Image (tube, rainbow over all chains, first blue to last red; front, side, top):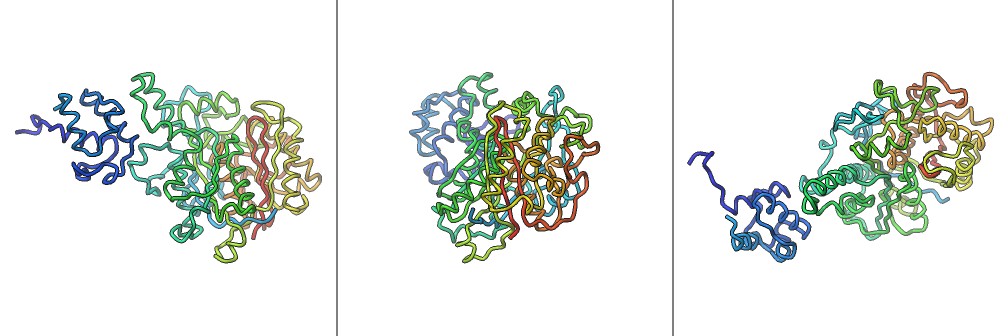
Length: 85
Length: 410
């Protein structure tokens, strides 16, 4: 598959958003680790991520939805439940 | 006033960030004021400023944090680190519940704020960064420095226009005398080179319009002056009381020994023409320092370069110093790198400290045609060698604020 035709998985897209918004590299993200403990993320940064997800993936996440998530995989789970891919 | 020691300095300025480079540029009167190219400022009446260069080279602030803070907090963090290193303070050895932060600035974090306001109107509520609320407000640098170092003691932010950081340093010294802190990072920061902040400064009517000659535009006390040029930057000093100094034995640059402040109660922008209230602030500061006017060796002026401001400042100095006024050098080295608004006082204090170290009075530049109504020795264009034991720093702010600090070489 050429680079032009490469499709990114949802996980890769969201990691890309983490990198763009918070300068967190994909390697730093441990999918099942708590975001506050492993990455020092706070609730404001979670809101920033959810705004960027809505902008880039078109999937809205309410403040109370994103603030309930504790791990990267939980964010992916909510997005998949909303039909994101 | 009990003396309070200045044991460290950190500078982020258009004339340099390293203190040696800064002092070299200041003492040689090398103007750092340039045309603003960071955004399209051409239509502004005044579109020149002192810009900080190479901040990133001195910064260890993470790119992740930089997304959440305004430039003025970034500069405060860099200046604070330089000051702590200069004072040789290892925070790991300190009781951080007794360390304090006293900062001054006039405008807050406008670059961050303007960008988010623009996004609010273009994209709606969701376009605004959730970090806006913590990035913009004037006490944000105090907060960021506190978080970065874990400093938890009595701290404060002063907003008093161009007198903000001088007052912050003075109140920090008073706090140390009351033993509310063991040591304090005190100073100021300002990042006004942004579209809206520049507009606000322009509408005050106090900025020079000589955009065609940026390096010669800011000319305090000159007959052809028409206002000041703004600048961005930060200055932090480390202050300690003598019970601690006698144990720790740091190098002491100078002592703060007096402070006075009054208000003009005349106009929202211009100072009182008669200089009477500023004279009272000078008197108050000298009394606090238990000094006579004849014991002052140098005055670092407010030097706003407005018609009225410079005349009233000259009048105030003459009211207190009488015949001796013509024997003291009075200079405005901020003419070299620009007026940092709320951070002026911090830079003036640092310049004073360096002037005392090097036995040199830095110049007022661009003073080529003396104004007959401003007839003191403003150290025009060339530094003067002089041993400085006692000195005054004068800062004034809109709304009629007058603040005067007395320093003494240790």
